[in-house]
Length: 178
Image (tube, rainbow, N blue to C red; front, side, top):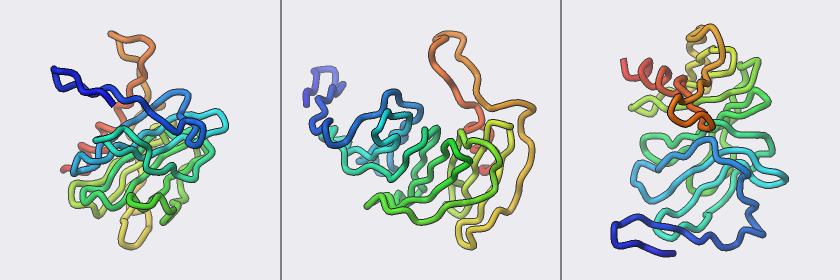
């Protein structure tokens, strides 16, 4: 990898043949300690969600997903990852190994956003119908479901028309911080 004088890092990723990088990246999140980066997106025959080592730019592992993955988030303690994807899926993963921990059932359409509460006890997920669901992580049960938007949560950035934004992540975060 290369580190420029201005401190910006440019990574040359190796092992592409074995990890099949996403065609496009829809979401990236740093771990709370800043040492890992999780990315999610869409991949042709590859892995739509991966965890990377920030210092080296090397992939650590991919999550066992086959569908397009719109959202990925680290828990506040950095031990758990949440993903939201096509196929109405919200999943929890071990952030150290990539092992599947739990799959939440309840969304009737694709899930495009996910975030943890600051205390790590609740997960919020948002879908394309504008529905937000809150999940208690201790009991693994849904505690609330409500219509947060009249339409899907995606909008186009006016500055970069090719760049998709997800304001539902902001809505979920604001609800959890209250």
